[in-house]
Picture 1 (spheres, rainbow, N blue to C red):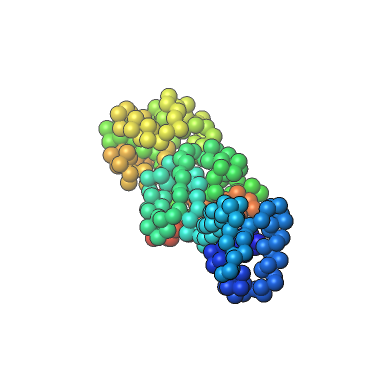
Picture 2 (cartoon, rainbow, N blue to C red):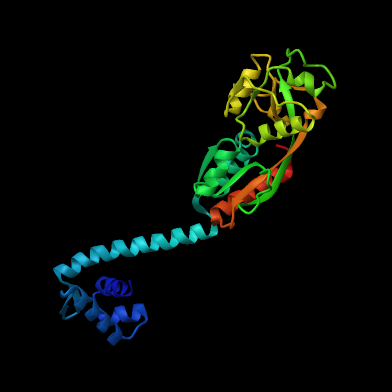
Length: 299
């Protein structure tokens, strides 16, 4: 690159003395550099004339390439500088179902308004699939319910929000409107649940077993929260989900079924692969998400 830059400046100015002054090097140093480049290419690059130098046909062809290479290197340096400060770059986020509808859209909108050069991809799903993507390196971080192990040795975790896991159903469900329903009566109803590996389902089953009851045997199992919520509006079925789902369009017409002994809390936040090595762009996105959650720590 040094030899190419010397050649480029000499060709542009057509004079070795002027080029040496522009490059802030001694004239003999520049002449030796041009000779070294000619030896490497095994071809003459300049003719000498009364006014200085002009490129040979080979030198003229090299000049075209030198301009392109210099422009590409300049672009690369600028892009790297932008990536270093997080103003550009790709961010790959894994998001639990509730985050796709709340908090995350606000954070992404704020991030892009401030840094439009970012490229953000969102992968939605339940816990196990998202954590697998994190382990595989396909995701920079996950925003979802806190792992039951707390992360253990695999993940780093940062708290963002808290919410309650409750039983919900449609307003016309036989249990709707009643108070202090016993776990046994609720468990005898018809249920629709996410797959067994999801944290919400594991928490429900753990809660039920601790009460000396058998976990519900769902007639519907789906990894789509949208389907479960939509189905619950059409059929007398119970779901176990966060209270905040009743704030989103698909869940706003559902009601809480009062089964106090089945209710529990759910912490959620940012989950990182250990060791925590985020790009500047991913760090910026995580900061935006934290700021949104500080204003409303329920999700």
